[in-house]
Length: 171
View 1 (cartoon, rainbow, N blue to C red):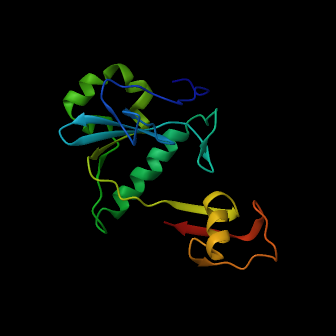
View 2: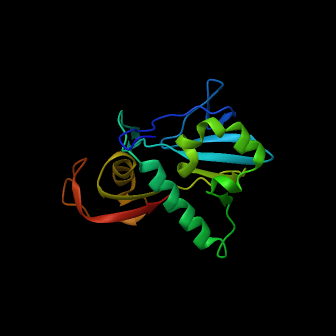
View 3: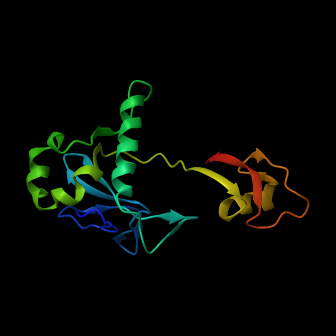
């Protein structure tokens, strides 16, 4: 992959996993997830960019590689704190059958892939925000809080208003 190339989507010779939509696997915002057999999945981080739950038409070159390295680092650092599904982000650690099947894709996916155990997802979303928009705005209108965080906005707060502080929300 040349430095200026951006990986927005990839199809591999394994079934793609994701939320089912009309019988087809729906692609996630940033990662593509493949069932590689033996109760294992391969997560491939693309260079897609998601802003407020919308995937932009262009990506950032190398973003998927950076995201993979950050994720792998934290999976390794926290493995003694809590169980996780991470196996490896190193190509040579992948099962020989997977390596053989993906040999023609190695240049595309080697530094942006993680081998994981197939598990049931733990549905948590973490967001850092400093504006009232999307689900944050909906939460503020419904409860006067930012996903349960007490939040005092200026009188008659407006959608997309800068809050003056960053909020970390987990839901």
